[in-house]
Length: 79
Image (tube, rainbow, N blue to C red; front, top):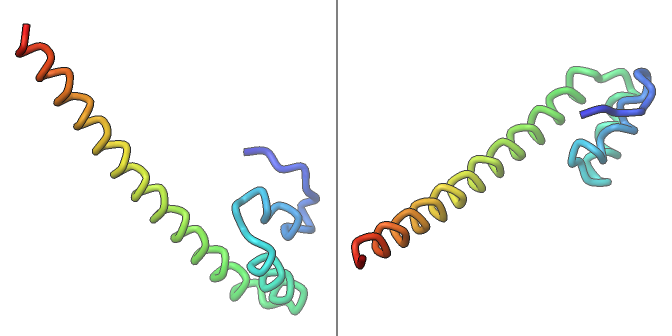
């Protein structure tokens, strides 16, 4: 994913990275105060949330694939 933001201003990239306004403000406050380790922890937590969402969506896709497979199988058996 390309980001046209300035390397020195990571806050500008956060909305594109799926961060809401509240998280962006919290990150900005930490980053501006020089608390880069805490700012990184905040982003790592958001990353984990996104990964969890991806896994849940993958389960949904897998279930749909399973249902579609079974429907095709039933149709083939009726022939």
